[in-house]
Length: 317
Image 1 (spheres, helix red, strand yellow):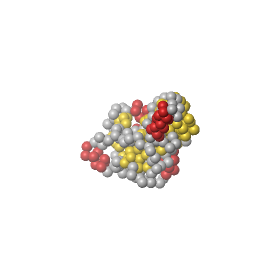
Image 2 (image 1 turned 90 degrees about the vertical axis):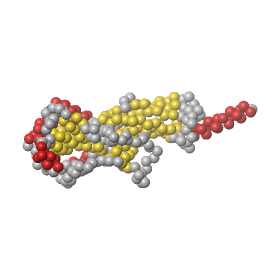
Image 3 (image 1 turned 135 degrees about the vertical axis):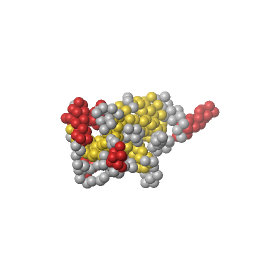
Image 4 (image 1 turned 180 degrees about the vertical axis):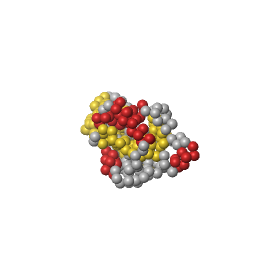
């Protein structure tokens, strides 16, 4: 009788420990691939292992979160929240497995300024929830990937500070290390905006100036060329045609630049960029295309960031 009493007290003690997370059921998201492309499905499985006592699990939830770094601030957004299962009774020794599938929406791609995390959690009533965090790399959609590949083949290399996202659009910076534009272009800045019939590129070319006149032109921004171009879906289906079109367009703009009738985009960092309302529909379409509701910066008291915390970005050093 005394032995049964001790066993009962021990069970109560284990239940108490499980409520504070010790010996509780655990969860683990296992992905087939740690990277995925916009517009494609992320596939994996969720493993739940029973703890020391039987527990009620109200739900298995997976949040897909984004963090972005802009200047010295970090913003966070919960992009999507998925419920994988509900109302589970998990016993000691149980090993449960649930399929996981997630279609990646239109998002900025991963860079040193943008990162993503899957946050998997067990919703356990009247106890500490159990968590699992998995870093995930978001690749551009196939159309933008085709353009980026063409630029690479033309000798352009993405700069270290490329990929800034300011909450509206993402800017990429390239330098021609070889190929037909080496020594002629100092920097190429591009914003890719996915439209219904293709990809629109907002482009800024910084020409490579020489001598005192080149330095003067650079200081007055006279060496900059601004334009935009639409690469249609039919064109993007042919990588060679895409490369040739980019090559010809860049050559034409260098040799006979168009008047700067197209607006450049607002500023991302310290550079001044002019505002125009002429192409507002194109810009707003790009903004609306991202599946991001709210970006909450650190220190914003109005935020509802929940318990999401996947650590800090690395330093810029």
